[in-house]
Length: 144
Image 1: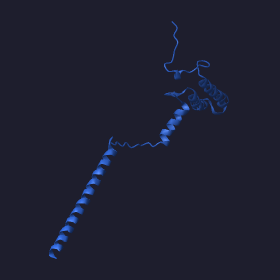
Image 2: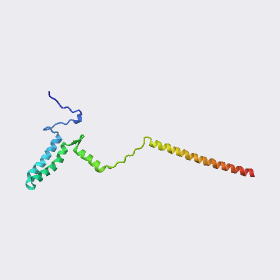
Image 3: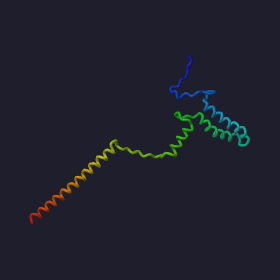
Image 4: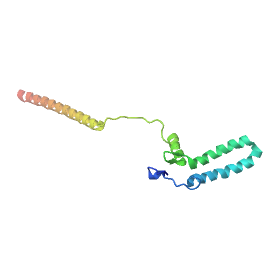
């Protein structure tokens, strides 16, 4: 029986262009070949086979990565940009601060209680002063 592979997610579908490669993969494969084949042909006479082979590997890997590498749906250039941001632009050490759910409400309640207590202390002082003043006035009035 013939089976047809159908991706579960429509976004995962990639149209095959040539030799089972997508257009992006094919373009970067051609670019890598266009750079590396002439480099090997003309460079082996000057640098030797071993050095040119390593040079070709070092040049071809990033070019092919742009075409073939995907990490969780991200193409290579977006993946490199994400790694760059994480390592050099965003802070590395993040402090975890755990505040209770009602932290701010609790502070307001405490501030209100303190304000009421201070107001009560002021009232008590006024009452004591008024009582003292009242007694003093009575004493003066009785002695007169």
